[in-house]
Length: 551
Image 1 (cartoon, rainbow, N blue to C red):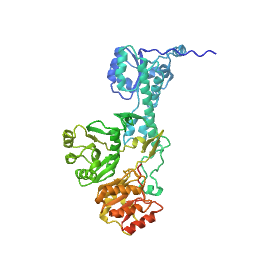
Image 2: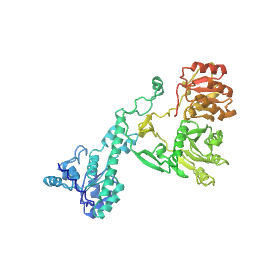
Image 3: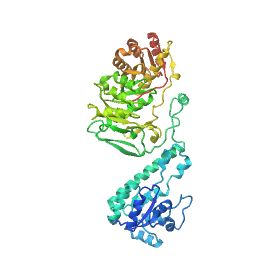
Image 4: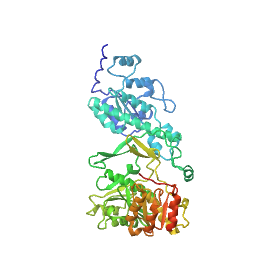
């Protein structure tokens, strides 16, 4: 048997004699119409697009003249017809294809210009109703795009007004090139994939397959888990590169920031006002800083080094919180990331520009112009410090409310640990209860410890972090490290643990340091021994019944 003869290579240059135009986004249509008219191209179009092109002085053949059938069902059916799709899919190098076109009187399309209904923009509106979203699920548009992209050897597909300039240049140059058609086809398939993924995400929510929020406190307490309703069985992500980075965690690693297409919340929506480009490590620290600052209700500042708080405080003003947070561990704070949960004003900038202080990044919901002016003109600061505005809004919506973390070959997904704890639900387990004036400190400490790397311990004086023990393989070592960092500030302060104490040895260290009260989740089989140790030391202990590991 002789091997099949391979097809001849497709032509490089395809003249544009006949095009189909059907666009939802009318941007740039006047310019396109003028170029098509000048080139003498035959134009077939649909509904509103045909009327818009005619208004720009272009002779247009309505699609119904091609199909022999009117648009029906409020425009739901208009292009789905063999006289349209055969004209797009016919292969110019196949005599049998050409014979079919001739037999049925079908004209070939050299280019298809289509953009899709604005489904993504519609469902992003909080007031978008289901019937509105459903009517914006495009049927004919994606079919036209896929058909033209499949037949890119002979047909050009244009899916975005940004591509009109290239098409106009091709009209003037005698036609589209094979390289150009391949690139357009690649972009077209990316567009339909993103469009279908957006519809799939919305439809999953509409069908109740994806949770729109975490369980209520009562439901969570009853189930022991916030994942109610259940996690989706499938998730589609369409990511685009937003920020090219000089390198990753180390100079030999290439890196970039990717975000779901159309998302402008969280780090995907940051706005850099000043300073050098952000690095991979800056972005990791920035995420840790802004997430912790967002958990604090009063004016607050957080100082992050290597994704862990080395300083944190809430106070009557943001400037006071910044000063207190920076003073907690000045050595670690040098070259850190600072995030605040209110507008960063001139008073905050004056605190940071005091002699001996320097930070890599300052993040805030907004900056006063005077603060920006000071930080960007101060000689030791202006060339380096990055000022970043973070947008408000839920950054987890594009990922179905889930926090994703990459592991080799896969992703882990969980509901973000973003729900604030309620001290009113906590339980005093020792005979002695903490004094009422320690409640704010205990609440603050348990908020801070949840954003420390486990095993984690936070020692606080009032609403200020005094010492942190992070990333230890034993809890007693985390206690030892936190107390060592706090020094004399531990005496009279409070201590929070992100998980239960497995042995009473930690309580012995805590007692010697003069800690006034302890807050921890509880849940160990040795809880009675730990409680007994606290009783013997005269230290009030509170159980929260909620663990906050962060690996």
